[in-house]
Length: 86
Image 1 (cartoon, helix red, strand yellow):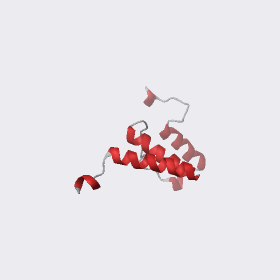
Image 2 (cartoon, rainbow, N blue to C red; image 1 turned 30 degrees about the vertical axis):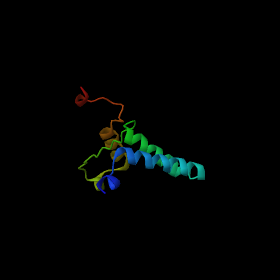
Image 3 (cartoon, one colour; image 1 turned 180 degrees about the vertical axis):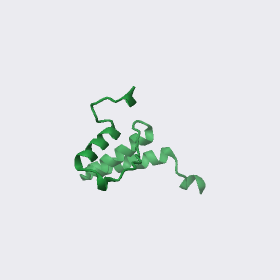
Image 4 (cartoon, one colour; image 1 turned 135 degrees about the vertical axis):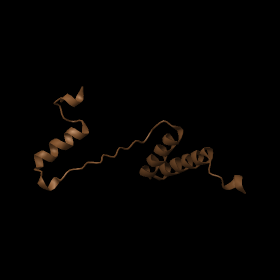
């Protein structure tokens, strides 16, 4: 019973492959693409990364340009180099 209902990478991969094939054959391309993405992640071919930035700022007192400049600075989009970059 345990083996029958166990969740293993092999069983998950097999199910995702069947979903991808069936979805593609029936024209449900979004589902097929999603299944292939999950397969790639299961195989370790893709890695999902996320990043959280905690920003303490009082944007009520900032102008639109101030907010854009601060976000560019935090995200590393700013082309100007400061002493903090060395």
